[in-house]
Length: 380
Ligand SMILES: *[C@@H]1O[C@H](CO)[C@@H](O)[C@H](O)[C@H]1NC(C)=O
Ligand SMILES: *[C@@H]1O[C@H](CO)[C@@H](O)[C@H](O)[C@H]1NC(C)=O
Picture: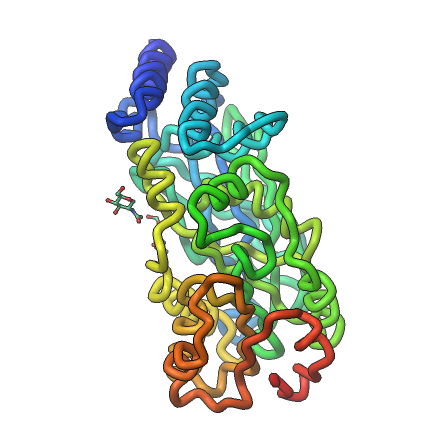
């Protein structure tokens, strides 16, 4: 009976979407299903989590995030609606239909709130812990104690499972455990390490949904060198992209760059046009990035951060603001100049006002920064 309602809902949504001009009904969470552990019809997107030390007793805490939604009904109508909407922007899909379907899938997922999941972290003393519940929109972000973990720096697997009847259905992710001190590298994604054409809406949509993801030349080498020279640094990818794009970003980053948790934005999607609108909104991310950097600094209070971004949006402004607030927490700031962005000297001078010039560097080619001795504080 529920499933019939569901299919009907999905169908109405998809049909309205394909009209495009009309907003589809909001992706209302379905409220009449039981709360508690996930049902067979539910899906859990468990994100990789940073873990940090809390207290003196060797206790660790992980910043757990997840999205619970109703298992995708693989409807031809939805596929048609998405491809139509993308082609309406004048973008050729060609033989990349599978990219489009894979990457748009979560935008069409119907949130399922009130779900709690039990998590087990490999090699950390405590028994499984229950985190939850997810919000009405299926989201959860929570600091959860994971017990006394051995060592101070490692990558562990975390598995979530539904207790009781559905025990055995599990959801896997990684926990990145790192000590309070040492180096932390915070990297933007779009146009910093991945070719995204943020400044051109059509090309941007094509890069997000259609084309195979592509690295920014020279950046994998630079990151690999930093990873080797900074003594097991903690990597964080801080992106303005919403969590719906997390699976494809993770696959891309993990293949080309040092692994680390990826911090995405919450985005509540109401209709297809709003997806495109929100994804290409020009810098609204400045404050979001400062807030997220402050959170990382609370997790790792003695770390020195290297922040890396580009000139398309507000990375210079956000990173500079963080550096002004916490001068002792910043090792170096690197900004990649992207063609057609605001690359005026005055923009950077203004952004970095009161930040020592020796701390930041704007570059065009990664080769300009690859030789720097970042560990010793040489940033330019
Ligand atoms: C995202 O949503 C979760 C759950 O509602 C919330 O706890 C978290 O603070 C939100 N994150 C941001 C960056 O707004
Ligand atoms: C997304 O875009 C819509 C307009 O299309 C706007 O009302 C909404 O606030 C935006 N949401 C976010 C999270 O930026």
